[in-house]
Image 1: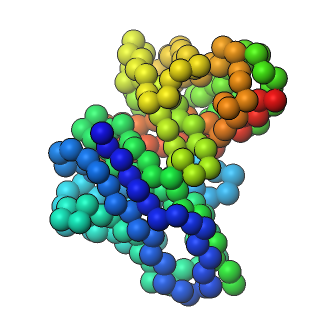
Image 2: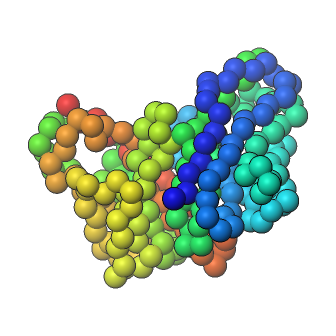
Image 3: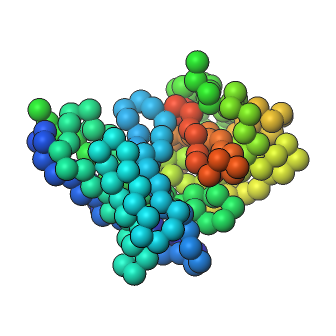
Length: 111
Length: 113
């Protein structure tokens, strides 16, 4: 079945540091890939997505590229801010839009 | 106002009690979902519904039941709560015509003592 493995946290960074969160997946067929973000006390919200190989999703300075050859969808941001402190979830969906989520990575950015 | 509203936000209950978590949405989406979130496990799908007459079990449906009362309402019940059902529960909706992105409520934190 489908599964997502993402790097364990927690991750603590200083402001303006570079952030990478690794995500790899196992799936049959050609899934769509997502990053969701959960701010404290809130539900998850879509950060970015990619629907086919070599697509790059981007939003709010975050980027992730769908790499079919390495079955990866790593999240990156060049310069983080305190407001980026959150839990980040990698996810994939098969054709009927049920999502499989990774365990989540907690990121804390210090001023 | 939130597009996906969950009630209550927090609930403490005792083992063996029946409890219902409610979800309503104003997004007009046909598809609705219930997930639970546990530390280190991410989100796991409990039940999902693609329309009012369509209810499907997810990966962890044992001990739970659902009711889709209307397009906008999808409730989750624990018939006899047990402590390992302590978790954060999320309702979500999606519209496959718009890429299937999930839209989440703010969650219900349930504690079973």
